[in-house]
Length: 91
Image (cartoon, rainbow, N blue to C red; front, top):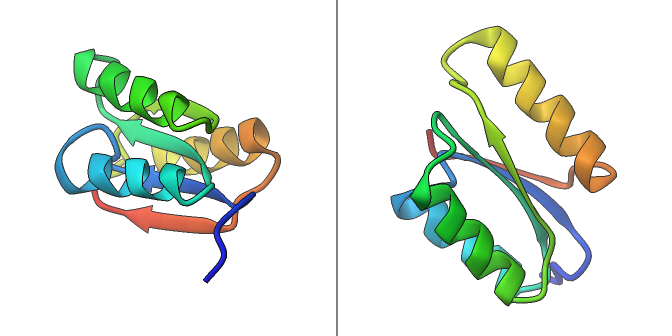
């Protein structure tokens, strides 16, 4: 599957498996939005790695267990990336 130019939102994308998926998608050509509950060093490290892979990265803070936060995360990711092609829920 060709992923170049695709746009992805990864919930739980600032640590662990979610972070690894975000970086892998970036290496395959995706711009990514990463969601986590905190704007912390983990989020910063993932963002730096994605940007280092030559892709765009948005950080979106929110708890997707709360419906309002989940909707906002999708909206911000879609607006910031110009649409979404992929959603990976790791939170």
